[in-house]
Length: 315
Ligand code: TXA
Ligand code: MG
Image (cartoon, rainbow, N blue to C red; front, side):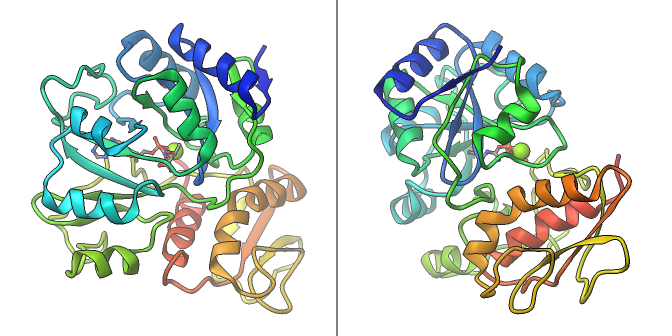
């Protein structure tokens, strides 16, 4: 039985107590719901992998309450410091050299010498980390390979009975996962996400190495081609639906469901995972979904990345 906890002091107290006991609690962040566990406790971290059915070679992001907490876990160099000052709290994850004395379970980083750290902006996430009083390992709170959750109902649809509780904070405002950057040997995009490449480049003053432009770019171990997969087949860049397809539109005149009638990328990102689930439900497991073209700039880059993975051949 998985408890649904209210977004108030009683819910936060209960969630923090569960986390301290080594149990797993899903909680809202501004991007998607995370499946939280004590990042210092190997039993809790192993339980995260088990609950998600996630391969243990795919490391987890550590969520912290402030920049000082990040400095206790990782070496925060000048470039990372600049990005943290500009964008934390917010939808940016930095992959940084792990400090030997960080005290994290080695399962969190899957044995890598680097750790992915994020300081979320959602008030409930921040209050929960503070009440818990330590670093929280938290992947997206979905079964591995499935669509990420942006509502407590999505979490329960996949993980009910597998985790202790979900803190229900309503829909996540950003709607796509954090942008992940590696800084060494040079600033590289590991995953497009809720913070745009344009905004990052403006602060860095240099271009980021992008996935398709640099074969030597480091990669995030978990970036499997098929991911975020609904049950229905997905056809991208569809100008109009074929007979029988559920049409997910964008912009004026759009379809059965619309990511954003006004063509707003932030609105589309916030709606993406919920509408993919809705379209999947309407289409049924043998059905098909067609998605309108989304401009590949700003948040559109993250939206197109998730759609491409959702449409990829299943592994
Ligand atoms: O917005 C988000 O980032 C959400 C919320 C809950 O914070 N979390 C999230 O976690 O999306 P997850 O586990 O679904 O995706 C984490 C990604 C994976 O692709 C993983 O391979 C990569 O981060 N990653 C984690 N640690 C890493 C490391 N040390 N080096 C490189 N990539 C890493
Ligand atoms: Mg995920």
